[in-house]
Amino acid sequence: MELSDIEADLTSVLYTEEQIHDKIAEVARQVEADYAGREPLLVGVLKGAVMVMADFSRELKLAASMDWMAVSSYGSGTKSSGVVRILKDLDSDLHGRDVIIVEDIIDSGLTLSWLLENLQKRGAASVEIFALFRKPAAAKVAVDVRYVGFEIPNDFVIGYGLDYDEKYRNLRGVGVLAPHVYS
Ligand code: PRP
Image 1 (cartoon, rainbow, N blue to C red):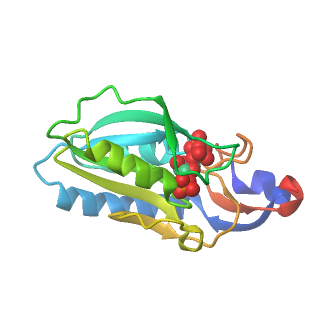
Image 2 (cartoon, rainbow, N blue to C red; image 1 turned 135 degrees about the vertical axis):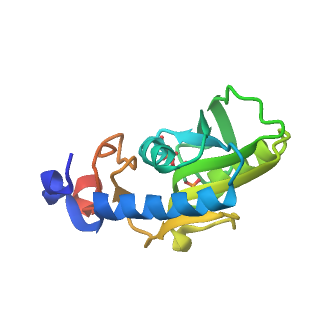
Protein backbone atom coordinates (compact mmCIF):
# COMPACT_ATOMS: atom_id res chain seq x y z
CA MET A 1 0.00 0.00 0.00
CA GLU A 2 1.23 3.50 -0.85
CA LEU A 3 1.11 6.53 1.46
CA SER A 4 -1.12 8.18 -1.15
CA ASP A 5 -3.68 5.40 -0.65
CA ILE A 6 -4.36 6.61 2.92
CA GLU A 7 -3.71 10.31 2.49
CA ALA A 8 -6.71 11.27 4.64
CA ASP A 9 -5.25 9.36 7.62
CA LEU A 10 -1.93 11.22 7.53
CA THR A 11 -0.72 14.58 8.78
CA SER A 12 2.47 14.32 6.80
CA VAL A 13 4.76 11.99 4.91
CA LEU A 14 7.96 11.33 6.82
CA TYR A 15 9.92 9.05 4.48
CA THR A 16 9.14 7.55 1.10
CA GLU A 17 9.94 3.98 0.15
CA GLU A 18 12.93 5.22 -1.85
CA GLN A 19 14.37 7.24 1.03
CA ILE A 20 14.02 4.24 3.32
CA HIS A 21 15.73 1.93 0.85
CA ASP A 22 18.59 4.40 0.32
CA LYS A 23 19.12 4.57 4.07
CA ILE A 24 19.04 0.80 4.44
CA ALA A 25 21.64 0.50 1.68
CA GLU A 26 23.84 3.05 3.47
CA VAL A 27 23.65 1.08 6.72
CA ALA A 28 24.28 -2.19 4.86
CA ARG A 29 27.56 -0.76 3.48
CA GLN A 30 28.66 0.14 7.02
CA VAL A 31 27.76 -3.32 8.31
CA GLU A 32 29.60 -5.01 5.42
CA ALA A 33 32.74 -3.05 6.32
CA ASP A 34 32.39 -3.70 10.05
CA TYR A 35 31.65 -7.43 9.69
CA ALA A 36 33.96 -8.32 6.78
CA GLY A 37 34.88 -12.01 6.95
CA ARG A 38 32.25 -12.74 9.59
CA GLU A 39 28.76 -14.20 9.35
CA PRO A 40 26.47 -12.19 11.61
CA LEU A 41 23.20 -13.49 13.00
CA LEU A 42 20.41 -10.99 12.36
CA VAL A 43 17.80 -11.09 15.11
CA GLY A 44 14.48 -9.52 14.16
CA VAL A 45 11.97 -8.41 16.77
CA LEU A 46 8.43 -9.26 15.70
CA LYS A 47 6.34 -7.88 14.29
CA GLY A 48 7.48 -4.36 13.44
CA ALA A 49 10.94 -5.37 12.21
CA VAL A 50 9.70 -7.66 9.45
CA MET A 51 10.01 -5.06 6.67
CA VAL A 52 13.41 -3.76 7.79
CA MET A 53 14.72 -7.30 8.13
CA ALA A 54 13.46 -8.34 4.70
CA ASP A 55 15.06 -5.36 2.96
CA PHE A 56 18.21 -5.06 5.06
CA SER A 57 19.10 -8.77 4.92
CA ARG A 58 18.72 -8.84 1.13
CA GLU A 59 20.70 -5.62 0.69
CA LEU A 60 23.58 -7.00 2.74
CA LYS A 61 26.40 -8.49 0.66
CA LEU A 62 27.46 -10.81 3.48
CA ALA A 63 26.40 -14.32 4.41
CA ALA A 64 24.07 -13.72 7.32
CA SER A 65 21.71 -15.97 9.23
CA MET A 66 18.34 -14.83 10.51
CA ASP A 67 16.31 -15.54 13.61
CA TRP A 68 13.31 -13.99 15.31
CA MET A 69 12.03 -13.09 18.74
CA ALA A 70 8.62 -11.91 19.86
CA VAL A 71 8.42 -9.99 23.13
CA SER A 72 5.75 -8.22 25.08
CA SER A 73 5.98 -5.62 27.82
CA TYR A 74 4.43 -6.35 31.20
CA GLY A 75 2.08 -3.87 32.79
CA SER A 76 -1.45 -2.78 31.90
CA GLY A 77 -1.00 -2.35 28.19
CA THR A 78 1.73 0.25 28.56
CA LYS A 79 5.41 -0.08 27.92
CA SER A 80 6.39 1.81 31.03
CA SER A 81 7.54 -1.06 33.22
CA GLY A 82 10.57 -2.04 31.17
CA VAL A 83 9.94 -5.67 32.13
CA VAL A 84 9.70 -7.78 29.04
CA ARG A 85 8.19 -11.22 28.52
CA ILE A 86 9.45 -13.51 25.76
CA LEU A 87 6.57 -14.76 23.61
CA LYS A 88 8.79 -16.46 21.06
CA ASP A 89 12.44 -17.14 21.75
CA LEU A 90 15.32 -17.60 19.33
CA ASP A 91 15.97 -21.00 17.78
CA SER A 92 19.70 -20.28 17.56
CA ASP A 93 22.48 -20.86 20.07
CA LEU A 94 24.25 -17.50 20.47
CA HIS A 95 27.57 -18.83 21.75
CA GLY A 96 30.37 -17.16 19.82
CA ARG A 97 27.97 -15.49 17.36
CA ASP A 98 28.09 -11.89 16.19
CA VAL A 99 24.51 -10.77 16.73
CA ILE A 100 22.86 -7.75 15.16
CA ILE A 101 19.42 -6.97 16.57
CA VAL A 102 17.24 -5.51 13.82
CA GLU A 103 14.45 -3.21 14.98
CA ASP A 104 12.03 -0.86 13.34
CA ILE A 105 11.95 1.76 16.09
CA ILE A 106 13.35 2.76 19.46
CA ASP A 107 10.81 4.71 21.42
CA SER A 108 11.42 4.71 25.18
CA GLY A 109 14.36 2.32 24.67
CA LEU A 110 13.00 -0.07 27.28
CA THR A 111 12.50 -3.03 24.93
CA LEU A 112 15.96 -2.85 23.40
CA SER A 113 17.69 -2.14 26.64
CA TRP A 114 16.21 -5.33 28.08
CA LEU A 115 16.85 -7.32 24.92
CA LEU A 116 20.45 -6.23 24.63
CA GLU A 117 21.20 -7.39 28.16
CA ASN A 118 19.29 -10.64 27.68
CA LEU A 119 21.18 -11.57 24.50
CA GLN A 120 24.55 -10.51 25.87
CA LYS A 121 24.11 -13.03 28.69
CA ARG A 122 23.76 -15.88 26.21
CA GLY A 123 27.45 -16.02 25.30
CA ALA A 124 27.41 -14.08 22.04
CA ALA A 125 30.78 -12.81 20.80
CA SER A 126 29.15 -9.44 20.17
CA VAL A 127 25.68 -7.88 20.18
CA GLU A 128 24.93 -4.69 18.25
CA ILE A 129 21.71 -2.96 17.26
CA PHE A 130 20.36 -1.60 14.00
CA ALA A 131 17.20 0.48 14.50
CA LEU A 132 15.72 2.12 11.43
CA PHE A 133 14.05 4.87 13.49
CA ARG A 134 14.81 6.45 16.83
CA LYS A 135 12.79 9.04 18.76
CA PRO A 136 15.34 10.83 20.93
CA ALA A 137 12.61 12.87 22.68
CA ALA A 138 10.86 9.69 23.88
CA ALA A 139 13.94 8.04 25.42
CA LYS A 140 13.59 6.85 29.00
CA VAL A 141 16.81 4.87 29.05
CA ALA A 142 19.98 5.28 27.05
CA VAL A 143 20.64 2.43 24.66
CA ASP A 144 23.91 1.94 22.86
CA VAL A 145 22.73 1.68 19.25
CA ARG A 146 25.49 1.16 16.70
CA TYR A 147 23.39 1.73 13.58
CA VAL A 148 20.53 4.23 13.44
CA GLY A 149 18.65 4.98 10.23
CA PHE A 150 16.66 8.14 10.98
CA GLU A 151 16.15 10.21 14.11
CA ILE A 152 12.51 11.28 14.09
CA PRO A 153 10.24 13.57 16.13
CA ASN A 154 8.10 12.15 18.92
CA ASP A 155 5.01 11.77 16.71
CA PHE A 156 2.70 8.83 16.08
CA VAL A 157 4.38 7.26 13.08
CA ILE A 158 3.04 4.41 10.99
CA GLY A 159 4.05 2.34 7.99
CA TYR A 160 6.89 0.07 6.92
CA GLY A 161 6.18 -2.29 9.81
CA LEU A 162 4.95 0.32 12.28
CA ASP A 163 1.29 -0.06 13.18
CA TYR A 164 -1.65 1.59 14.80
CA ASP A 165 -3.90 -1.14 16.19
CA GLU A 166 -2.26 -3.63 13.79
CA LYS A 167 -3.08 -1.45 10.76
CA TYR A 168 -0.74 0.35 8.35
CA ARG A 169 2.20 -2.06 8.70
CA ASN A 170 1.99 -2.81 4.99
CA LEU A 171 2.55 0.78 3.88
CA ARG A 172 5.62 1.19 1.70
CA GLY A 173 6.55 4.52 3.26
CA VAL A 174 6.30 6.07 6.72
CA GLY A 175 3.98 8.89 7.74
CA VAL A 176 2.60 10.71 10.77
CA LEU A 177 -0.86 9.46 11.72
CA ALA A 178 -3.55 12.15 11.87
CA PRO A 179 -5.01 12.60 15.38
CA HIS A 180 -8.60 12.06 14.14
CA VAL A 181 -7.70 8.39 13.48
CA TYR A 182 -6.74 7.56 17.07
CA SER A 183 -8.56 10.14 19.22
C1 PRP B 1 7.64 -1.57 19.03
C2 PRP B 1 8.99 -1.67 18.34
C3 PRP B 1 9.93 -1.97 19.47
C4 PRP B 1 9.28 -1.29 20.65
C5 PRP B 1 9.98 -0.01 20.90
O1 PRP B 1 7.10 -2.85 19.14
O2 PRP B 1 9.00 -2.66 17.35
O3 PRP B 1 10.04 -3.36 19.69
O4 PRP B 1 7.93 -1.02 20.31
O5 PRP B 1 9.42 0.66 21.99
P1 PRP B 1 10.25 1.03 23.29
O6 PRP B 1 11.54 1.62 22.84
O7 PRP B 1 9.36 2.03 24.00
O8 PRP B 1 10.43 -0.20 24.11
P2 PRP B 1 5.62 -3.12 19.66
O9 PRP B 1 5.67 -3.49 21.12
O10 PRP B 1 4.72 -2.00 19.27
O11 PRP B 1 5.25 -4.46 18.88
P3 PRP B 1 5.20 -4.71 17.30
O12 PRP B 1 6.63 -4.74 16.82
O13 PRP B 1 4.56 -6.04 17.18
O14 PRP B 1 4.41 -3.58 16.68
